[in-house]
Length: 243
Length: 322
Image (cartoon, rainbow over all chains, first blue to last red; front, side, top):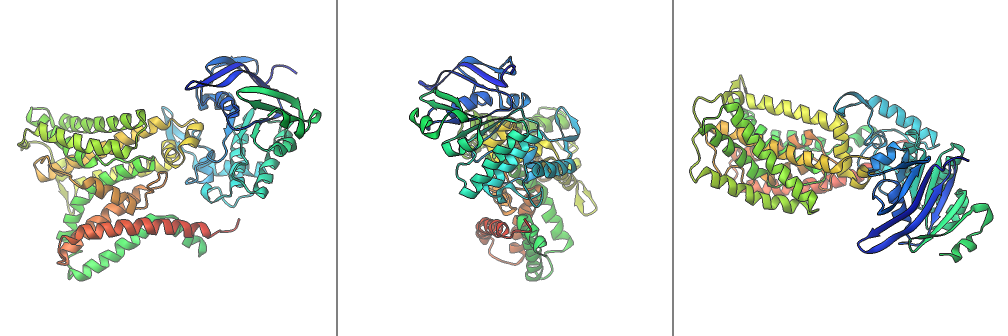
């Protein structure tokens, strides 16, 4: 099976005296979608923040495809192909879809020291294609993201990750604050990841959503991983006993 | 038709343009034809670059999600530094650069304090409003220095036909800033930083650096505007620009800039500044008691904020084909 796509070994993290992550070993194999469950404060978000470069770990190492890496910034994580989608604020509501898709990675027609003019025609064209690729149908790349529904926004965020050929997509409670219909749409996007050979980590409170869309479930409690088993070999009741 | 209406609603600066045209017609009428006269327009246009430059800087900083209310003090400080440098025998170009560097320094301090200690920029720059004003008075020594007569101030003050050269500087800077905001990747970062800072940071935008540059840019534009005014008037008074900070914020907001960041245009800032100038001038020409000026600006400001949020809500309700 080769080296896992991403692996954390012996990860520790303290937040002002609180031991938020205690010697955690965590790995995700290529093409796998892992559901990460647990209560608030269990350490899910802390683990994700380390993998996505928001916070450095206080101890332990991270490996991407077998190589030890130092992920210091979100930009560094993105360069390694790790893209994170947060519950609500992964988009800028006051900007158009086309502009949102390329924030921080704008294609330039001419540039000097990294600054330059954006290729807006290309941004519009590619965002139309990227959105169609995740089977989302929107009227125009110029529409403001603030005018989209919550589910559509998450769809655009996923389209963005796919467009930049991310190897690992981390979804941090993407269905929070969404209606049932919108939630189902997002679950549909996650299921579709598998068919496109994208590896994913899906963080959720909702066990049913995880069991619908993931290959493996990992449960955390009090800063430690307390349960780790393929979906086919377990049940919701069994996982819940560990939380 | 609905599409056109929606485009109009999405651009609050267009509502400003409509108001501007309406007011121009009203004032032309009430001033009995003096308002649009050659001489009066010349006066309005002379003041516009100074006010407009400050408003553009404040607008860009507000788009990035921060405020600067120290611009009025910087407006006085930069030309004072320039004047002292000139009196000390430094060449005109370098004296102007010193003035702008002093302004940039104030902006950078504003940025460092705001970002390093994570406090509201409103408070930082309120403090800086007093600090910079005090420095200006102290370095003036109580008596404003007299500008040497042989400096080439004409690069800003000379008239080409109807138009003062400062207008060309203003127009050039406005075009450059509008291009920066809407055509470059840096403009995209400014809007993302102010619109949703967590998303921008997560996507690798250096949000701290973006804000720092906007703080510095805002202060430099305010300083430059002050320098232009002093060269026009001939003397750097330490009290210059008092109250200008609030007019600049008012101009930005009247032009459709959001108080929450992420939304605004350079055109809006200019329209806002122009509206304030037109109201000021128009009321005087219409023989209205000049004390009503602040009332009119205040009422317009409140009306603009209420109106803009109404426009946005209405626009959102108009769904074109999905």
